[in-house]
Image (cartoon, rainbow, N blue to C red; front, top):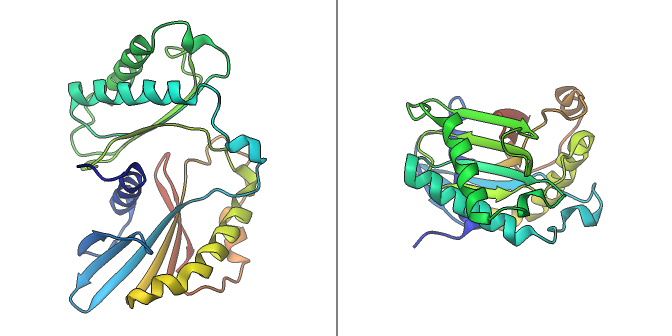
Length: 248
């Protein structure tokens, strides 16, 4: 039986992070809780890895609420995922934001899912040779029911995850969200430390910063003094995959 969706998504984030990271420690990875993963490097050395999305209270509460057609859109993506995997046999991480108007409901959900699966398949074709692939497209002409779509292919992903993207683009809030998330996770660190591991890492995941207001994140990070028990803290951007050390 497949693990819960949340666990599947955490596996995807960790596998993508490992693929992008240079010098990620070798060892056996065990799914856990508090922290999310344990990397068993040797009999005497283990690293706890906590993975969290970079979201917070900087957007209005209503922005986070699923729209009235959320379940319909979720069903379209789940069916598109099944179509795609049956034809291509590749696991992908996909985020899709649907348009607010009723266009995508003018046809059948089945036809919409088939069109979406075919569209993704055309773009991913030939990418199953061992290299990663990342796509960000705003208002795709061939998919007028979508506001945007993001596709990530990392070799060896063990799960697919096609989801409705209804998180706000954090933009200029990112520095504040990093600080807020770090404070919240540092408060929980005492719980993680009950596992008596050698190190604790925190990976904060964000979808993308492309197209958002520009700011010098590294300059902001360099000016901060972080008080935390985590030995390493990373900001992990998914589209395209990019790791920025926050604390190391």
